[in-house]
Image 1: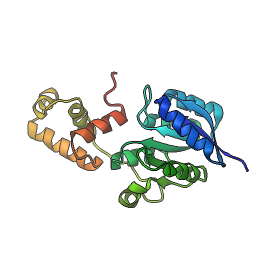
Image 2: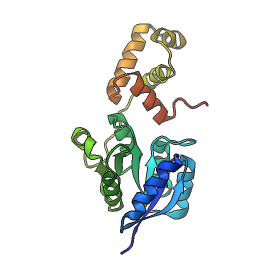
Image 3: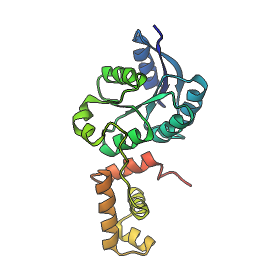
Image 4: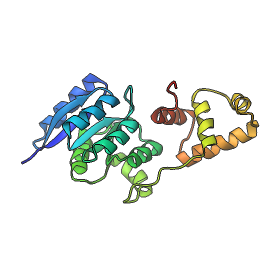
Length: 212
């Protein structure tokens, strides 16, 4: 039986080692490569052509969202399973829209990742069981269209993630505080973000907080 060839992209070596042991224990899987950041993940995927890449969402140099997009474009035969601590709807939607077939939480049972790898290798989508009931309804069979926010809403949310107050954002953008509040509320509603912590996490995912 031909084994599922897996690339592991995870910046924490201890976690990556544990994932490798888990995958290699499966009779139908083998780890063929490892990467400690997003750029390395894209390079290894291109060189190794694995069946599945398990991609940590939070990685240095290039995060998991950007790496997923790049791998899907450069190595389309490699299926992506996103691995993260975060179960926010916005995270799930963004990764699935970027091309990931699987989405698994790090805090879930190890069987979730194993099942996700098998599903992705077979071309099937897989959502962590703790998320499926809540999220699956908003993800039709075709990849859903990611929520769209306006350029101004994104600008306001980025300032919010950087820690600026409504008054400071209003002064910077030469708008009223009330207008800033409306843009902020609309952007958060569209993305399903509940508070500042969610906004910061989303900003990190999008790369908004990186220095130009």
